[in-house]
Amino acid sequence: MKRHTFAAQALGLGHVRNLAACAAFVLPAGFAAAQDDAGEPVTLAIVGDVMLADGPGKSIARGRDPLAPFGKILAEADIRVANLECVIAARGIAEDKPFTFLAHPRTMAVVKRHFDAVSVANNHSGDFGAAAFAEMLDRLGKAKVGAFGGGRDLAEAHAPLIVERKGLRIALLGYNEFFPRSFEADADKPGIAWSEDEQVRRDIIQAREVHGADVVIPFMHWGIEHEPLADARQRALARLMIDAGADAVIGGHPHVTQDVESYRGKPIVYSLGNFVFDSFTDVDNNTGWLLRLELDRHGVRSWNTVIARMDGQGTPHPRPDLPAQCWDRETAEARACMAQVPR
Image (cartoon, rainbow, N blue to C red; front, side, top):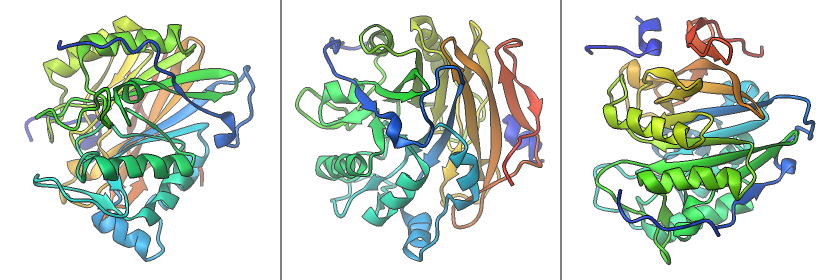
């Protein structure tokens, strides 16, 4: 590989619709143990692609939990978020595409155990059609796991998920930018949110002005697979989002971690890499980050990462012995640091 991510080194405008009237989905504070306390920072843990079909799904069928090695680390956070890189449904007809991921409904128990919210804005949410996608949304709702970046229609897909913790209102927005463009929500059709520049800008502004968010974080599905550096489009869109008022921009999809940077004092983490996935054999594709953001009313106070290494079954294992990355508001520069994890 010609250049490497930090983790790999450590290891050797289209038509715009006005959605201002769209109601945000609010995730009650009761979804997690943390009690409201406006005097404390809020910790948000976010991971990349979680794919619960194939090998991870078989592990769950045998009574195992592929997220167990990260259970304590996730449990420490006030809010836990992932990109759900599969469809969880009882049945569906596979689309004509090289890779499709259908996870058994039993896997929802694992999602509920470890996550408060998931992004469904990715290139696999439509793998088994609109009915299976709608079934997954229903199952997430019954499990009290918030979903964002997709919905039963265009307005719902673009609505922010508002998560309230300790008096802080955090808006999560999700967008897909994987070509060819497909499975996009429409006025009367379920699907995912697509990253139209002007619509994204408007969504971010409305998250704060209409829905009362203190902190706004878009979670993107973008970039070129297996490339260790973000491309020009990712960089331009990240800046557009921060100019519109985003407090941080987080991304995934390339299956590898990518570079990080600051823009106007706001962090951009271009790709978290894989987190639960069993389709790869090389180190870069089996390495991901758990990103921990410390939030307050001014945005991101600090962030740090825990390196995850996946085994042959797609189970991630924390590697606090490897140099990771961290950042704080005062310096606004990423640096090497060792992750602190619970024993």
